[in-house]
Image 1 (tube, rainbow, N blue to C red):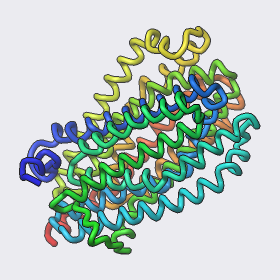
Image 2 (spheres, rainbow, N blue to C red; image 1 turned 90 degrees about the horizontal axis):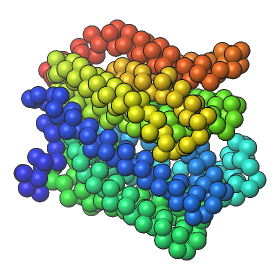
Image 3 (tube, one colour; image 1 turned 60 degrees about the vertical axis):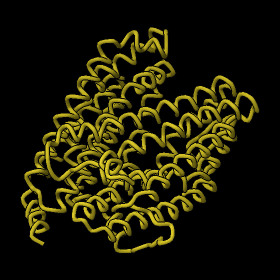
Length: 458
């Protein structure tokens, strides 16, 4: 690989301006997440239009359950990003390569475990969730095939984390773009041409995931530097895995609890009937893209801060925190204001029902406009995780976001039964979590910066 290619695929996070590099790092992540959401929407649309409403319900109703099962392991990829980034900053080539290899081996092991777990527990879990009899057969088939592809999904996440550790978010986007197009094409072939229904949708998804892994592994194998994956020298180093899990596991647990709290809120939304459900779902389509903006800067902050923590650049960590927070808030606020300003024509994409629109507007006004509040706790949590404090932000997020939402749903909401009041739990939980997270950062930063300075003199 030429020096010019290496320069194009990596970012110097230890010197020079920060804000422009954060943007360069974040933009491909936003694009990747948005493309993934669009491809997922295509899955649902093709299933509904060409395989019928039962197939639509089967594919669309499994998302929360799938996320609940896989979030624990997907969160661990954050740990891989942090650990590999630190080795890169210190120039520890062998440790960095061994950490890449270890994370990929762990991805395969966890993927196989999830494949078995998901395959055999699909029907019992769907039954526990009360899936209707006319849907459960199709949902089970979809989930079982989907989970067969778990090793591919895990390899993509951990391989992408390794690439992000050098500042490369462009090539994971390339992999996702190609595999996503293949996913849509295979959906049309399997569902429209061969009438395979939900099985066709699931098989297309697994095939596209396998293709994305081929791209990611080829990138890592062709690397000549710190994140090269040598297929002739595959190693599994328990000490590296311990570091990866210590950072990533709390983030995974946080994701699991988030899924549980959101399932409870959705159940409360369902109590208002189909119009509220449809309005909430329509508004959520805009909400997710806003969230992608935040998570892209979270990934940027954690990668930049991890490298600078490893070499004791305390002042630069502070600048990363400030710049990432400002950029994420301004970007999200701009997007959210635009969406709200054009809410009626945008909502017409999904529905012409005035009652559905009324519920959607309530959701947009209460939860979309102040959505940038999440940046205050998400970016702060990223900086804490980058400096080795992973469990603390996870606990604060679980308490401030998840527990507050559960308390609201089970204690406050039953007394008033108002849709707007239910949705108000989102900004309330964001404010509470942000206050706790910033307080934790201010009380911990002196000790953590001292550790960073120790790294600098080591």
